[in-house]
Image (cartoon, rainbow, N blue to C red; front, side, top):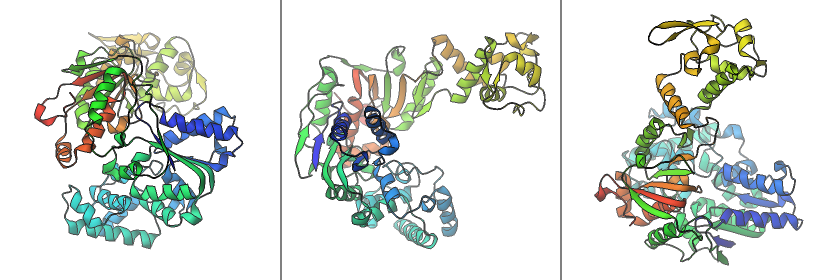
Length: 518
């Protein structure tokens, strides 16, 4: 197995995809190439890039996947046998013990949702299996309030429930594939494995099985960016892997000032593969600030990062007040529905047509009291693809021509003269205030947000012209830092190395509870 060590911005994924393109150009059949990424999004991006270069249908590259999705697809487990929240709800009722599984479990990504977002007991059970360690040992290592008897009871109940109902959970897919790899694993001419530093011990079993079934296997990763140990990642296997290796030495992202700080942070990591890499030929800046609102973010791309999610909520409030469009932990600051309604209304006012679907969205923010006639709220006579003008809505679809608007007094007005917040009188006041601030700043609702607010873990693989990094530590991370500082060093190394030009370090609220980057 050939390793690429890829420090931040050195093009790990691009290097692998270039190898894919080289192989396709040499005549290797598309279905003989396996390309495995940590998330479905990354796998699909790699697939689409290769398909576009060689004019292939993406379906002709069936093995551009995550390890989990391959394990499910190639094993004997049917999709209707995969456990979802309703199964865990039923299990809770059987046990008389409530499990917190309110979110739908995504089996396409390689960080199990049941570890990262749901019940702590199920998390401990799953983590032990991913790490291939005894459950009691994992329990003793984990900071969890529940007693060992409770954890043991849930583990036994889960096993019995799955057996009786012939259903399988997230980790069963991997375990079954790894156990029957000789039978399940396809034979590949070439196999590629991205973000290898994030694989768990169980996933490494599958990686070795893929290696045995491949003429050639390449893996890429960076042990300094191994920030998923809490989800079972075994970075030591990547570091100690036998075989030839190459370090990608030129960063195309990191400027000199940021690079200097990044190297300083990396030098604190004890368990690491020694490597050097070069900054790009641009100085950039690293500067301390006291608050995010000191910064003018009207230009360029921005990443606002913190070690824990709760630290970011005040930032979102400030950005809304200042009228910035942004992405908050994967969600747009203005919903697509609201954006569609406001933009759609303005199109109508200009005499243009909108689809029935857009008109329906607009109507959802109008009252039947004096904007819409009764019975027209859901536009029953208009199909989603039908095109309609404002005059047609008035004539045929229940929109009132004369309405009252609230000002210093109740005034009667032609609906054609009403701007968006006058027409859509059921828009929440907070949304109206935010939209007004957005328009005042000149933000376009349908644009891709230039500003992203995220945890450091959520930013992995991302980059921006400007990075704002909170150095505060949560109580939990303080304790983790004392036990194993390497994990914290790696997290902040990832945070620092997202910056393409400027890095802003936010002064912590409590110096005693912060990470010292300087």
